[in-house]
Amino acid sequence: MGTYHRQVRRGNDERHYRSRERARQGLDLYAPLPVKGEKIVNRHYAVLCDYGLDDACATIYLLDNAETGDCFDILPIGGNSEVNVAHRNALTLVAEYEKSGKKIDNIRIIDTRALTQPWAKLPSIHGEDGMGDIFMPQTPSVPVIGFSEWLKEESEPLYVVSLGPCTVTEIIMKSKRTEKLLIMGGCVAEEPNFHGYEFNHYLDIPAFNACTRYPHVAATLDSCRDPGFNLAGKRFTDGSLLSRLLNRSIELAEARHPDNCYVYDYIAVHYAVNPKDFTTTKAVDREGNDLCELHLCHEK
Image (cartoon, rainbow, N blue to C red):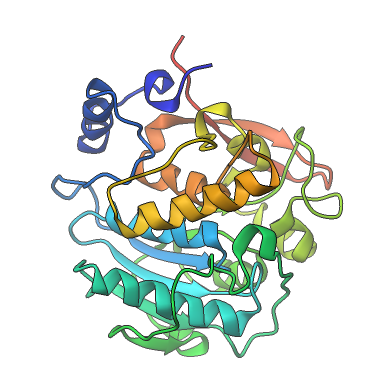
């Protein structure tokens, strides 16, 4: 099976023009290349990340692909890290993004530390600090807003990107206006990866089940374990922040299993950037949840 850039079905908007250009030049679509283009649509993202090396990759990919007018509320949550660690990692990540010279005036961090949240430490995947042990803690010059205050804000409908346990996601879906819910979690036919479940599903089973009852798209383990997403054996050499994070993800994955590296959250957010690169199918998981499951398009 070939790589993603030779198989994906392209659209004709600006994002897909960039995809075609990468393919024409023989470049990997998942390499963190510079992104150009005018605004397609203004989005207000609520990005829930349990930081999580794959969450860090996903966050930077979304920020790098932001269109003019997009804004990002980043909600560090418990999951791959305890919530206080996730909060620290979010601050550090955005500070590193700021140091790289990127725009940060469209970013806020929403503090969820007052909420009790599940988590499980997985150092072989995410490092001892939860984010690959790459950076020293630091603080960016972006606003930090308490979750309870944020919930009360009036805003345009949110594009909710849920990349960890759905504990906080469920609260948002009950309390805020939303335009889209993208969930990374769950599995149908693929082998589970945590106590008989997909990791995010297991950490808060009732919340995950509840969130699937809202209109959604789900990047399940079945979605993410497409060979077109396998980064094993790859290294990115442009020196960007995303390259550093991806290379560390690959390094840790190859130490566990040299033949495969699927950076789940990073894969999931490609739907937000290039939705036409995916199809959706109806699927039912072991809990009886009806999932709108994402699948990468492959050219025939």
